[in-house]
Length: 359
Image (tube, rainbow, N blue to C red; front, side, top):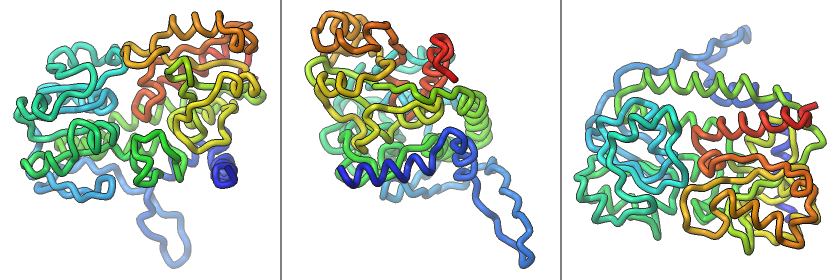
């Protein structure tokens, strides 16, 4: 707990609402050099040059080599799928898998062109049957031990396997997709890095930069525009018996900081700790952010089951958020580190404005 508090203290210093937009932009820039008279350096132009193959990149502690632009890609998680679709790569995809929600509306037509291998994790054999030349995933639990396969199993067959940096940067090896501790808070920079990596791999760098710029603009338009100081939130993802709630430093941390609110479980660096309803009542958040999941793998996935439980259970009935029906509905994908994190910020900000809790 002492380590959690020290990390959170550092986090709050680094990611205050006033400074978060500037901090994220600054983190994305690299200094090209300083003159002897300390003149301000100019940030480099985005890299939109054609990719030179073989391309070698560092990915989650591994060296990944891609010999040519992939033509038969399989994306094993929704977050990865939505990046590839956003980059206009549906015609180079032969399969998707592991969905928590419907695809983002603007991507529905493109997504319909790509076979869905499984709603959840497909078998290794099912993926190999598509004859992939590239595999990507958002979580180590999908591309890793206990998942579809280890990256090395694909690479032994000549198939490069890419894991999102959102699930390894700022996490120790034991916490990759284990809902474990983050050693550093997640930032949107990790999402932008994934977009740029995939754009480089597929030789669509210009599209990648355009998409990053679009997300940065949306983030800038909403981040810091709502000042919900004094408002506390709890994020409930799934499980009725022992709910999974958000800790300080994952995607929900970006959302919370962006609107100036407080996560009542910001004293833990665990990404999705399981807690008791009594502990949630003790912290009594102003509003509950509820994930409405289309999957049906854990009790409390669907929104209606969440609300039915909250309004019938003798403990949760006492929550002020329940008594005032302050429910902020988001998709599960909005609470995963992905391009949908910006959607989550927008939805939370809109709800706080509607309740006049934004000042």
